[in-house]
Image (cartoon, rainbow, N blue to C red; front, side):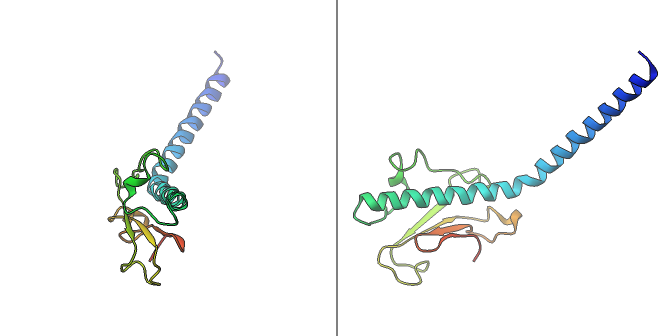
Length: 136
């Protein structure tokens, strides 16, 4: 093999190593934010299931998330950051229901699961009036 071809192969190999290292670094940096994106998506899915349930049950929301499975959700989703089902549901009157609506729900990702993304505990959240609530 001639010297030029060897040098060319070495350069291509070096560029490949640099490219792989850059991709791995980008992937590792992306992970905390991707957990938050998945969590927000799960909250929207649960919110959609809550509305479908409400349609079937005379505009009333379920009293707990387990009532959504399996008809409205295949299973309750896990928060990627928590590694478990961390979604908590509040219904009816309560501190989350500031306007005092008679039939109301509020979902939150319960815990400090997204502090690495700069999100305070028990957020993101979702309610039937405002939709997705990323921060207090």
